[in-house]
Length: 610
Image (cartoon, rainbow, N blue to C red; front, top):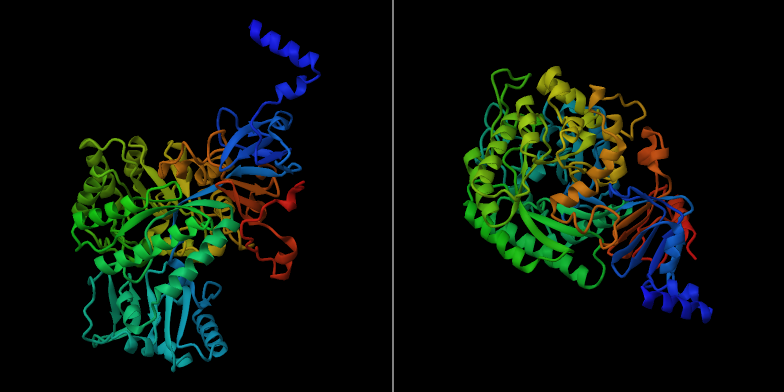
């Protein structure tokens, strides 16, 4: 105490009192006068944030932040704008999946005629293309019948055409593409009743492929070129994600046509991870990437997949790129009757669906992966799949894997008994809110396949699972949701309103009680997914000592009507202390109001930087 008093007296006598107090280490960046929502329950709101290198060193008042400002500090007056933790996606396929969204966008079509008109128009505008690609069709919109090659041949007879449905699981091919892919009457279905080709009365493929049976044809036709498609996909999707405020992603399975091949898929993963590593070494990687290795082919031994995942974990284990787990894809989706249900489908009273990987194999994989320190995520659409997966997760915990952070992905059709069990076991959940709206004709599809009771009381009960206390992440599952609709704010608005933010005529999906709060929505894109990737001590909230992953919004979301949340502009995204995106209004206006991608700018001019 005497020493301190003596030191202060010397400072005062020397006229240096202020400089003696101002001994904080100077920051590289200081943001002041903002509405900083920290997602830190002990200090939920702040005015200022200071960043040194790639870490946050101060969170608090603008006055106290002055101590961190030095001669070389870049200061930004936020002028009341909002700052949030960088958004963390708990389920997207951003590295490679954009090849599935090449070509004509069929989402806007409302009928068979509109589909065919869009396809013909696109083909006519691309006369030199060998392949006509497309995406976004839904057979319920088409007229409750499956599209055929004959339909396509009528509008595009001379080019190879392959069009993915809105889930990317099914495909629509014309005769030229069937021929190039070697698909004939003699073609053996990968898994009859689950992954197969629709056929006519004589057994001839009609041009409609169910649950990824199209992949072999895609490869054989020459449509897959990873050197071009994978590289371009990564660049496009990471740039767009940065513009939407995402700073981290759980890439929950690399999407390539080699998904079911042990060696081919391993090769694609090696290519992708090396691409990310090179970008990271150049300082150009825009999202922290946590990867799960996909297990789709139940014929491949469980231990072979675990061994491959271990190889990747040894090579990629940093806070920028890490192989963290294994994704099991045991079924397809309820909309095509390829999810396994406890009760029959409403439109097929004698049918409960089918599994692609048996429940006992799923259980073996969860146990084997957890034993090796991997977390497991499971695609869980059907009520029977959800029940058996909860059984498997519980069994692994009883076997000693109590620290495993296994998760149920999609959590679509959930029996109330299993909802209760998921809460009691505190299982992590991921949900895509836009799917619980009338987006993509979703509500009608649910009514047709599940009936009113399950549509309203079993399907993606987002508020229920939040209120139970589970750690729930919200994301878009690109490519099943188009990347332009994958923004965190877009999904949060959908979760709060239960409507499609892009459709002024959208009607809420009942019941209203499943609408979540804004606070829950923000946690669903920050601290909860950060926990799911075991980074909650470094990401997901704005706290001193955590990584400087931040997003700046033009408005305070708490002052915005729920129906306007998706329209709030992302002004800047910062990951690891570097700008990965900055909104440029002039360029945006010149590009039909589309956001633009600015590589690693040094300063934030839009918010009063000086």
